[in-house]
Length: 156
Image 1 (cartoon, rainbow, N blue to C red):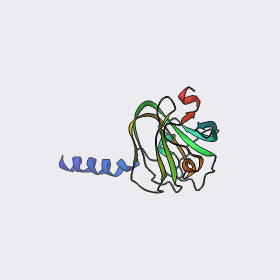
Image 2 (tube, rainbow, N blue to C red; image 1 turned 60 degrees about the horizontal axis):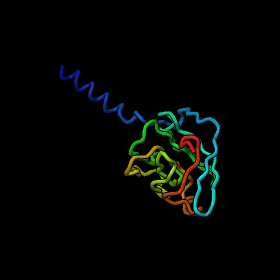
Image 3 (cartoon, one colour; image 1 turned 45 degrees about the vertical axis):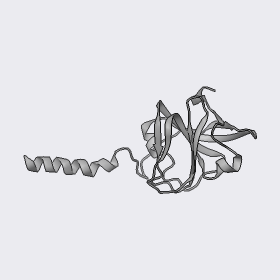
């Protein structure tokens, strides 16, 4: 009996890291990128973003991508508002992580989050979604907390 419990525990521990992660060869389809606009005091900034709606899409995120354009990004659409954390495992591109409330207002920005780090960036408050942009784009465009993201997910 002890042997069976030990074997079950070993299998569980070995399998645990695989849950919630995707491998480079896993196929995750995001569909066609969709337009997203960020409205700042200086004006509007247009992006084409992949939409991460499913658990598989959100688990993959920007992992395993070698480059991204200045006008591209990804939006993570959560089923329910929550306090969210984002990490950069298997992500080789520095990212600006914008934590967004349900009304489309940016709560917080994590600027140029370091590639491959396991240190999580946290929203620290309840949010509805996250937008990831190429690292440095938020500062370059004057995007700040309080600015508004326009996208169908936010109903605006």
